[in-house]
Length: 136
Image (cartoon, rainbow, N blue to C red; front, side):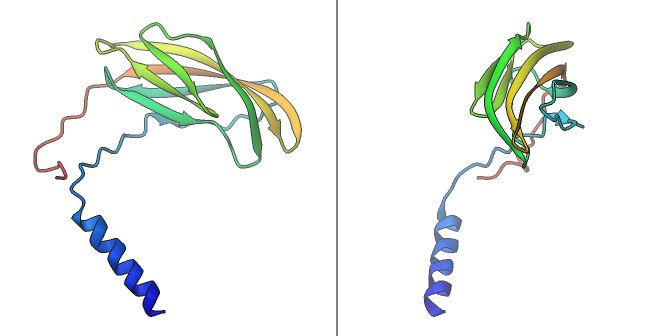
């Protein structure tokens, strides 16, 4: 038991001594509805600042994702497949709205199928961070 406390104490000291800025990204998807891999079509909405990016995983607890593919590319940014998810990069001058479409293929509860995700992207103002909010 003393070894556990000593290890935890050492870990706390090491973490406290590291001087790293934390940059947490805001949630960019809102109200995303689950999809079921049953040839369903689901609409999602993303809000993102110009020049920002958003990463989104696509696996739910009962799913195995075999393939994620972009079938409708955005016009005001780019989207890349990252494992069983995607990452959207808004252009620096992005304003208004954009959209893209992703097809997810795999198995849900051992039943194979596909889902089409239509993602509408809306521009938001960049978040202003004051010097008091920065972590040094």
